[in-house]
Image (cartoon, rainbow, N blue to C red; front, side, top):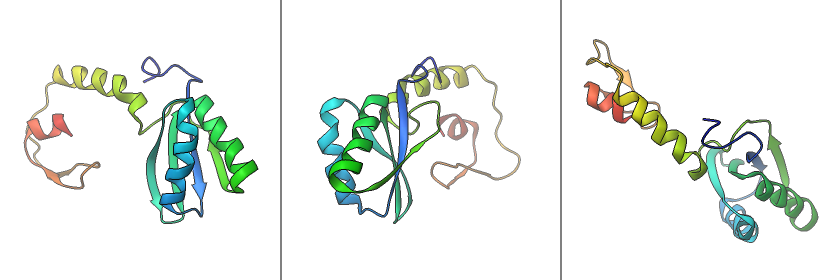
Length: 126
């Protein structure tokens, strides 16, 4: 994953007690500095954003100075759950193609969709 996004180039932050539409406004204001996206909807009161480190820094400054928003930088090594991780996804997909996976003998639930996967092709796609 670090080859897709070298250490220090991406980051994440949790935004506390702010509606999604207001978060989208904040994102729009700082997106001129680079990539930033909503990564996780943890709860109605906590949404996580992910993006370039310098853009997350701009968001922290904006939240503190202009909006008085509670934004907590997360101690992570990469901008997970964002488009900045596409290279890692592609590399993992290539690797999985070479792995010998059999049809499962027990029920397997995909953590991305919460659906059952019943054949090896579905497992590789998940």
